[in-house]
Length: 525
Image 1 (spheres, one colour):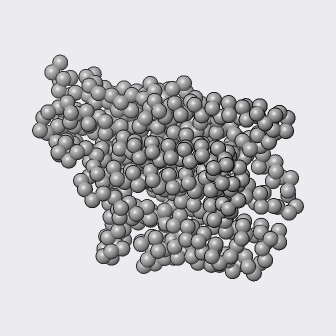
Image 2 (cartoon, rainbow, N blue to C red):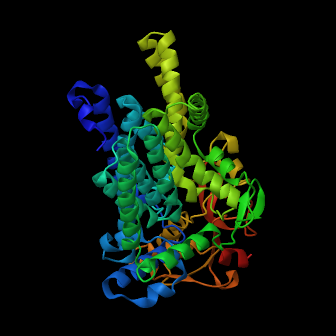
Image 3 (spheres, rainbow, N blue to C red):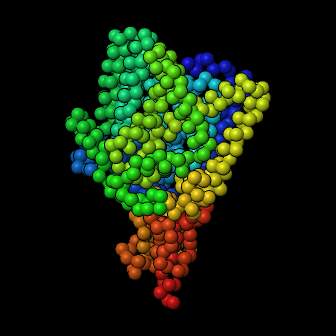
């Protein structure tokens, strides 16, 4: 698809062997650790949504059309329902997490193709893999985040097919790119940036006389038709009224009515009234610092190159740089300008992260070329490798040491450790730490019924991840006064609870993610 025939045979290049080893290691590690993660807060609702869509496809069950979440693209949830385990609830959750990880891994493979297409250097393509996977928040989320990670993966697919299409616009490539675009839109509507970028790239091809107007227009028409057809095909709620349903979804999603309290810079704020800097700050404090530095270098390099080509013919390298830049900045600036509702950090914007990494790689490539002109190749290689190792080791060691809580990573800009960052930002808003807490209770308390009070609803999904016999022993009560145990996950409370007999805690890098208190012990005092 991306001129892979130009790649030299693998046996002659050590870097290709290292790439294969690295990808195999990522796959092997993922297959080994996918069972370690808890269930996210809203996974039960996502399962119901997938079932409703699946039943509509098989039996035209009208329940789907009355659900408020029909405005969400359901493609991945339909896929999960079809291929998840048919066993007990615990096996269902674990199988979904495995499928989600394998989807992420497929995105890693597509990202390798994208890197090769842009840089034509095997070591740069490998660096892209390393940056994408040694990103604690992204890698941790790759096992349980069934909303944002699949959308990010399909965004990578769309970028790959977009560049492939623009290199030689024709009917076949337009059709293929359209299908991937339709699938992307059937996950989330912010994917509309892809048709915009595709049209921009095609206009540049016509203006620069690499493609005729007629050929470009015909291929884009086929692309548009296949994209629209694919979106409707993969989105059952649109079948009855494709245009009306699509417009309604855009209106609803642009200002989704989700008013949630959040902890941001030490203050409680509402998801419907965010400051303009909310997303930039979250990205800055949760991305490894090496990537941030390379990103700003790459951003400067791209802007400088493009400024020098104003009024001149834009070659394909410049076109690609412009489109990658747009694939990150347009969604980010759009959310900031129209003040869309965003909550739970910047997870809804994870799909721009591959473009962020690509811009960082442009910075790395520029740094390599400047050094190579002044120093010998061995010295340049040694310096670049040394810088990368110094930048990669902190997030990598944090991931290893704090597994399976990679998803709550903050860099040093947020504080010296997670405990300090917890005073400023939300940590376990997914509620995954409930699982080890409940596992502790069913192991240590031999009562037939264990009455618990859950501070947040995140604990309900964790109960379903217990073995069925243990799950049946847990009874959730409505008031702490009725419970034997109080379980809190510090969702918006970075301090302490008003209880004293703490019997279990999940603590990560100086921050408490969950505490269990024995209320009977406290009452007896």
